[in-house]
Image 1 (cartoon, rainbow, N blue to C red):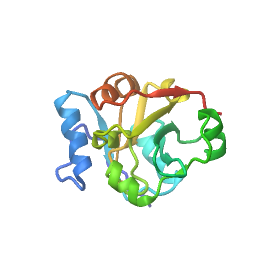
Image 2 (image 1 turned 45 degrees about the vertical axis):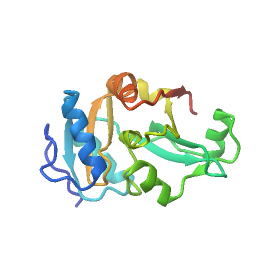
Image 3 (image 1 turned 120 degrees about the horizontal axis):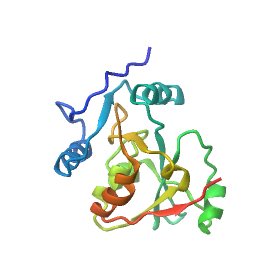
Image 4 (image 1 turned 90 degrees about the vertical axis):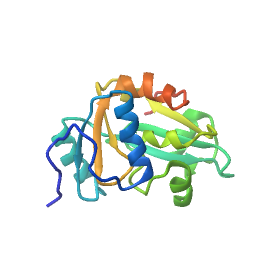
Length: 180
């Protein structure tokens, strides 16, 4: 059975990555209350359902995309249950030939493994190479459920804080779109 810890309101005792440490230090510095859980490696939608139930939240789906030339990068946040079709997203954005960014760029630019993509990765994007795109449906949720930059740590914070405060702090102005 998939392990999901009890809900905690403190950072992990040991950090698995530099980004994860940065996430919790930032939350503490900005005095942002959190609820979080530790889990087994979450790789399926069934795993996310168990995380959602424990945190009483709907987690988001965060996708790292790029153009064909790998010169423009996009971090797209939508609801986990929504299907994603690159062609549809490309049409909404008015950009041709978008695809998922290569795994090595995911680690290099966002500091996360496959499955650990999170909005918090933009803190590593000091050159502002990544454009943050948020599906309008995410804004309808009071809580923002996401990875802490690992595949074994998930949290919830207020959506308004992510959109209005965190992204400003990280130097990334989001573009809000209606997707599907």
